[in-house]
Length: 227
Image (cartoon, rainbow, N blue to C red; front, side, top):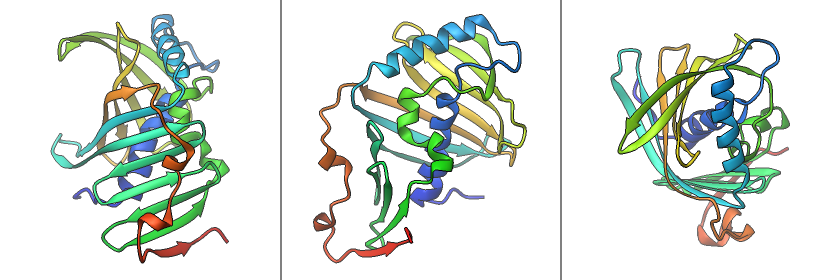
């Protein structure tokens, strides 16, 4: 299956799934967790919570069960509180905390939907703030040197076996306590890898930068699905 370049499938179902994983990774009273892994997650959590507004480059790639690349997409994510903007070539996603605007340049069309409270846990702000839900067992697998830096690998296993994935790996920079990458394994057989780079935790973002501005897209057709 080739990877489609649709923003809803690539970013919302891929990038935000990665956000969901680490946004849920901290504590779990339902099983025995590795205290060394908890130290790594505590450090990452403290670092992310110190950020006021975030700008980060990302690359999301999908491989099949044999490791064959199915496709990839790169872009930039901007997050401030419960507002965000995800930008990839030809497509944009804006959220003001209440509604989501998904713009497709190829059709000059924007689809407007309400933020679904049931899926709020996978919104980008959770990636930077929420580390205290109890959905995973975790353990520290070890350390490795990647691109000149030491990263620690934390393995997550969802308690809820109905999840679409059965395992995820977080790679955390040991010295900086920042996220290097996430890899998760879907039950369909696909493997997803989300790499982050050039993360700025004090990005000078304004609310206007995170809002869809119709004036910037002349002739745009609106598809309002909020009703």
